[in-house]
Image (cartoon, rainbow over all chains, first blue to last red; front, side, top):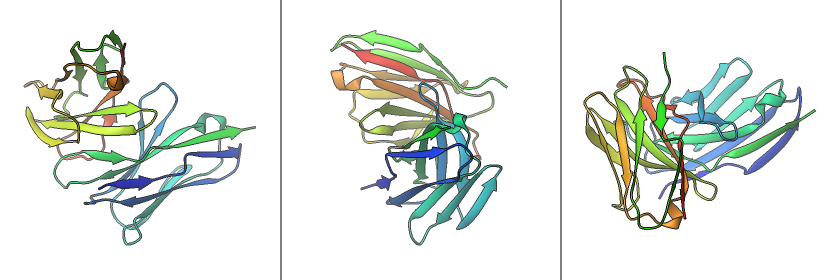
Length: 111
Length: 112
């Protein structure tokens, strides 16, 4: 079976740093995605890791360890608009773009 | 470039009916995937189409089906609707050689 775990909820304050963890046990692995989804809106792409290491993109960074089945999304200088659900997803197959998603982490940023 | 569009945005049906949802991918994108999103299960993969062929399929009953047309537009059909089919149905498109999927706004289906 496929299993992707993320914390259900997290809270943080404006200007802080937050790390959202994701662990996975899947039958295949061809990369890990992070998406952001605001309430009532479509998921939007944040990052894609296929090799071990850290990928930095502005205030957001994503890390992957394939040997540990572990990834995290790091959000710096938090803003109120970062309040959203963050979805971790694994691409199972080399061919095709099918993703297996975790249930998401709802992040609430307060002032 | 226009994003992924889905129609209709909202739909109300009764048990036993069938429904067809439509998705137009980003221009030039040839892969279209469908997902079901519910509060309890999160986002679950339904199927993926590429060049009018189903490339991957998730773990859903045969009541869920789809197709893709030569212009890459895709439709999904759910027959004999059940209450549990109430969900947000999301379509995502991607380029042939690029892994990143871009999601549409979804169709909110309510089954009464």
